[in-house]
Image 1 (cartoon, rainbow, N blue to C red):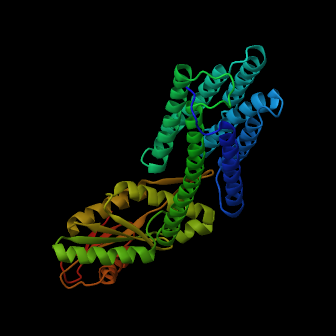
Image 2 (image 1 turned 60 degrees about the horizontal axis):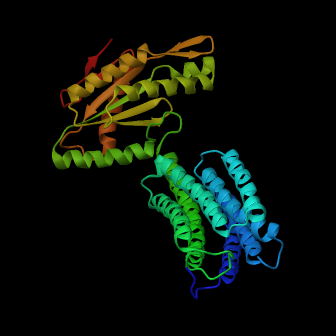
Length: 405
């Protein structure tokens, strides 16, 4: 199929300029912006493609081993470098043996169909087949990256590689059906259209790589922001809410409880004689005890309950939708699991108990501090009466009911 079409030599040179410009652009970004594993491979891939298309554009003026064999090998190699970059970026590990094996199989075929059986059509078909295999593999690894299925950028990457694979299949079919060329640079609509599409995909993929890199950067920034917010609101040792955050949540819970007229209870507890643990076994042992106590308490409570570390060995629990009697039951359960817990520290077994104060929200309470102050007073009463017990006020006039052991 011959007609007046765009000159392929010119298109090869244009493609070389485009890929060279894209490579320089990516090098610049590589230097000034944070990039991730794989970005360097993409950058080098564009550079290798530019060199390959430069050699291809010299066909007829340079030896065949440069302008045909090496030029085509570099073009295929640039696709393999992109594949390696994609694998690195997606954290899939290296696929170098696949790439080396594919290139090792491709090079002898180029040599054979250049010197032993000089066939432009077969060279086009073989090159398209190998590039199609690489593109299909790129589609496969992006499709395999299940954790990124919801990201539009990754879906777009899969679509581009799938489309390019189909293009290579159509190029093979179109070349055999409509092309009858003995000279690659003879006017041919199929190859001219293909080279124009190559140029479009080179630009598209470079843009895609930049977006993938920026998206990864945004994901890390968001994760870092979440971590900073967590550090600002969560006690690093126990994983409970810190004092400031606990009071903020308590304020919101009180407002909600009053608005919707549902009960709210507060439990405060303090580990008995905890200072002796630090003095006897050291602060490392004390931290381990706190961590284990926090873990057993967390497992004993609902997901809607709010745990806070108010300081040292003093803790509080907000119990939404919980009456005072039920809160006392919860506190008694916590007291029992803490007493049953045994912390192994080297050859030592450390056991500890806790004292509890339980209060609930009344119509007269407006601030979380008031409810906590009542619970704290009850906690003090429990400690004064022997520790390892729960104190709760059921009378409404500060008389105490003790659930002693």
